[in-house]
Amino acid sequence: MARFTGKTVIVTGAGSGIGQAAVQRFASEGANVLAADLNTDSTKDFDGDNVVAHQVDVSKLDQVEAMVKAAVDRFGQLDVIVNNAGVLCEGTVTEVSLDDYRKVMNINVDGVFYGCRAAYPELKKTKGCIVNTSSISGLGGDGSMVGYNMSKGAVTQLTRALARDSGRDGVRVNAVAPTLVHTNLTAEMNEDKPLMDAFAKAIPLGRGAQPEEIAAVIAFLASDDASFVHGHVMPVDGGLNGSNGQPDSSEF
Image (cartoon, rainbow, N blue to C red; front, top):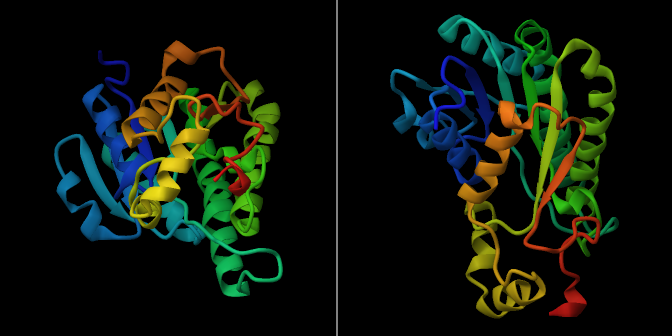
């Protein structure tokens, strides 16, 4: 299958987890990929004929604009941007530190907004598409995760609002909303076997997701197979029914 032959894709947060799996998926389907991450060590193995590593701090608009320019300069056009870079933030509204709160909003919200804004003129030329990484935490709510929930809720609403405007330009906008995914971001949780067993029990399919499973949905949303899918925030949650958020701690 080569759904992306001749197309150019940017993936942020490409150094690990969902982003890394997305880079590999798009490349395997023929795309030229700019693999963007703050940590250059995590993307250095990507450099090749059709995959190029690029350092970016998505919380800085000028760096995001430079990222888009780098993709177009290297490959001639831009067809897809996957705004995937993100961080976690724990704590209630009175417990979370202001530094952590600002960081999660700067990366998870500003970073996605900047990616959409910078890429849009190029995507308008190619009738391309945007895929954002939200979370079922942005559809429901979790205990002691107020900053993260706010940030992913913003991504959900940005996706829906932008889609209302972008359709007239032929630019499709969608998002994935995963549940627990086994990545470096959730490594500490993975080490807590009782917690993970309880979490898995609460998910109807009985387990968390692998990054490749989320990447497959991202690739679908970015492909012509989803040519009439627009403004959709797709839960990829093993049957949790999206709007309920993550399993509540009371279930553990």
